[in-house]
Length: 205
View 1 (cartoon, one colour):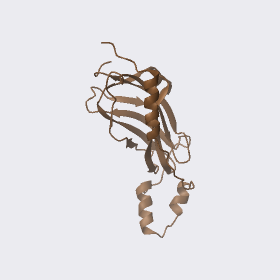
View 2: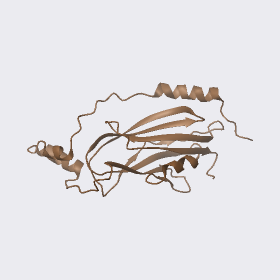
View 3: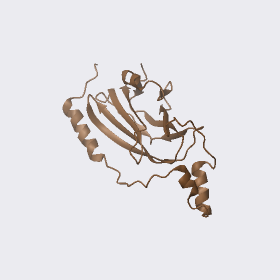
């Protein structure tokens, strides 16, 4: 039996339902300080000194001055039942991702893992924002709070989204366009990219 495409009315209803569930984060970020300013603050406070050492790694940072402060390196779709690794190299040609799709079996549980580096200064309030569209209709928008991180150019950080379940059923099958953005409290666009997710009845290509 041929798979049935959802109607425009069904997509609009689903988008409206998800719109009700969306909520903004009412948060005022602190003033930005350089790494040196933070290291010089409250030198006499032992507990604060230990906290900063934990955040900064307790070592001096040497990095390419031309490197971005936040460098997003990979997106990985984590699914225990997937036959192959589903990874996007975000340091390559981002435009090529618009022409290919991850195949995801309907109804499986998965997480998204973002790998990134912080090269120079502490970055506060990192966020991963993801919009899901189908046939140009926005179905969902989710803001994931990633957190604050100190510079660690020689080693990547990893962020995992909560466990989610892929949509299932005849109307859910098909291609979804995902718009991803990695940003922070100061609204710096560290990286934006688009990719596609193809929900199928089974793990097939």
